[in-house]
Image 1 (cartoon, rainbow, N blue to C red):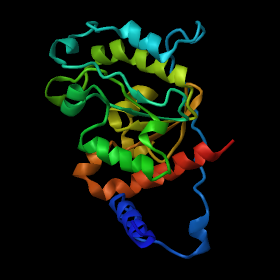
Image 2 (cartoon, helix red, strand yellow):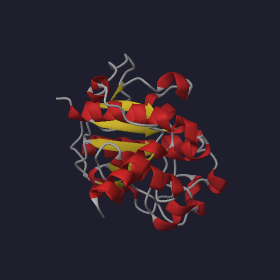
Image 3 (spheres, one colour):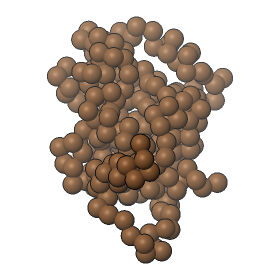
Image 4 (tube, rainbow, N blue to C red):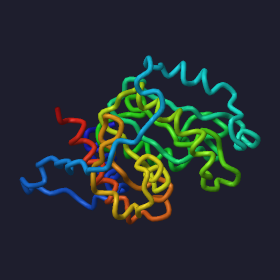
Length: 234
């Protein structure tokens, strides 16, 4: 592929994210500055003062989990995937049909878009860690119920505690509400950075929502610039 073809493909990709063009104005060369963290408390979690886990130990503790009713309809438990030492963790809602079949989060159409979003800040899926609040597919992709969340979220929190990322990106209202312990609208929460378990949490829209509402891709691009700035800060 020639450099011109590479540039054309690169610009086409950013257009898909909602970036309408480029500018030679020097102001556009200034990197995004992360929003100061809010006063929201760090979410509590299990055994934070106990001997640190490993991801393998957490997966072993889950086993072939039957702790909630979702196990009855799943094909595969979807634990998480990626770099166990990642600086950046993405958290979604729950596995869908493709994820339930393949045992890996974000592998369907929404996952393909997430891969492009990750690439927009110069990273690959292999460099980040991707997980969901819920590790089994809810029937007909319904929203997880409260008892299912309470059963599953401690394992997610343990994963985050082991990885110790600099930044956590909460994808969609359900993940945001679970991680921050709030029911505020995503429109009020995104655009800010929150303290979360020793990391900075950035709320943004779920890739599946972007497939239905592509006009919001520009908002996600702004959030990813914040993520990039946080990752590059000391």
